[in-house]
Image 1: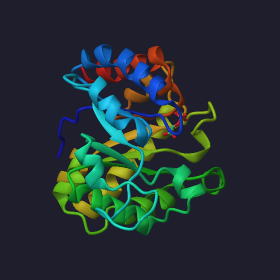
Image 2 (image 1 turned 180 degrees about the vertical axis):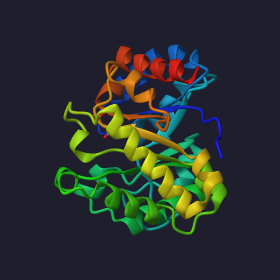
Image 3 (image 1 turned 30 degrees about the horizontal axis):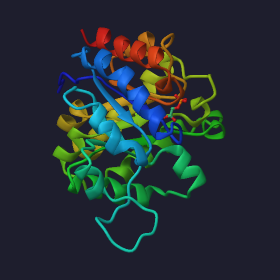
Length: 258
Ligand code: PGA
């Protein structure tokens, strides 16, 4: 089944920007991104800036997202932020299972699935990150790695839940390295991910779920990436902190959607 999927480009600011810097960045991006009707743009600032940036984006069609959440709605979890709090702040999206959290903070597939279910239960749309590292790629294990990550992330979800969510394919060797996957490579693995989703949730949800590529996306490589039929957008790190670059990447997705 083929569904028309609206491209989605999310800016993952990671642990960058003070409150003032974040406000300035969002203010500079807001109007130009709002004008790109064909693409959904999402800004994912640090937790501490979410409330201020919601104000900056008021009235614009740019969405707000967080970079992580806990799986419980509230309780004795010092330092954590719950999906209820994020929804209350006006977040629509939450990035879950980013490789930096898997690698540095010990997030497992089971934990990511728990967070995905909690996010959905509280009205947030997860952007779930999957991807292989360099050794796994060299060993020809890419498909197996992403299959097990995707299957684990989607456990216990309904077809409707899967249809509405976003999965970002981010090969670890491409993140922050300036060495992106080629468009063909990214398109092929993302095609594999869509087939894995079909196996888990059925053809309907697989045709609807939006699949992003992430890892050293720039204005230069974005048009070719978005030219791949299976790629529905991008998760952008470094380039999302640069006003002209992020607008150019979103514009490329908007043109590709035309
Ligand atoms: P990058 O990061 O665009 O800086 O490679 C992408 C990501 O980690 O989401």
